[in-house]
Length: 114
Length: 117
Image 1 (cartoon, rainbow over the protein chains, first blue to last red):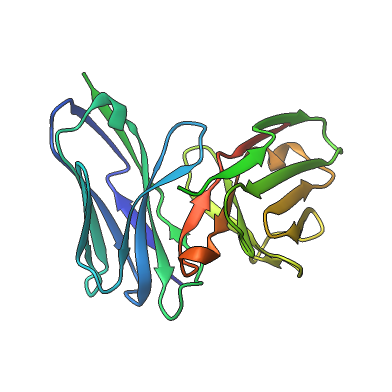
Image 2: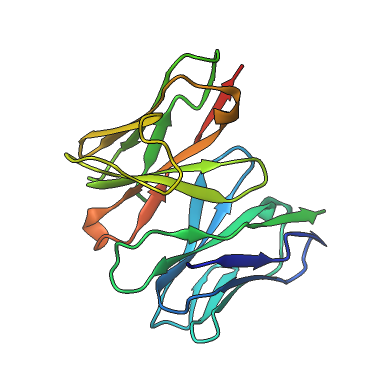
């Protein structure tokens, strides 16, 4: 059974810092991995999706990497801003087809203070 | 981007009553929708997969008679919590798969906060 773990559980940083969120998964046979953002009491917003054949994806100040063989992904946020404060979730889709069910990690609660 | 809506966003009901939550894909067709449940400070747990025109597939431990799912059209799925109890209070999030992107893009609704008193 796939298990997804995110470290740290919570992170508080001053504005402007670069930071790294970690995600690990136990079964490396994945189809893709996705990073989401969730604001309090809200749904999920997709940030980046990395296919299993890819090593990284970038969007603005966000960069996500994937090392499938070691079961790890990182989300790098450059020059953090208070507006980045949210819970960040990673989720993996099992390999084989594009129709597998997502398994989510517990999330990292990020607080960026001015 | 694709938009998924949920209605209502918040609902409070009395124990023993039933509550229906709607999930709509607004600008794409979704033959598959998913229903998740999220407890405070916990991650999303998949409850069931809803397929248009057929019965939903429930995850282990989820009571199908308590959580009724209907996916009557390509843009609408509903989750009915029957005979709700306080322990059913939770944040329910739906997600719809966009067939037009090859099937692997999932878009999430804003969630519904259910409180059972």
